[in-house]
Image (cartoon, rainbow, N blue to C red; front, side):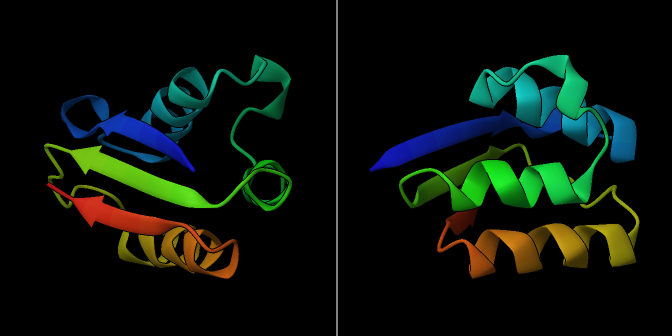
Length: 81
């Protein structure tokens, strides 16, 4: 099982979410800002946990819901800390 740790203190918008996510997941930057790429990466990996440290609820609600839907569809459990 893989755990991805996201630094929520560095997430304030869509761009910063992807930057933090790709850095944590060690994904090349050519996947930048793309929900389809996020789905592709997560669906091709072993399911696990996304630990979202210092979660601050700063993302656009619709964008955050889209992210959470992808996490759930790909069988990732999200822990907002």
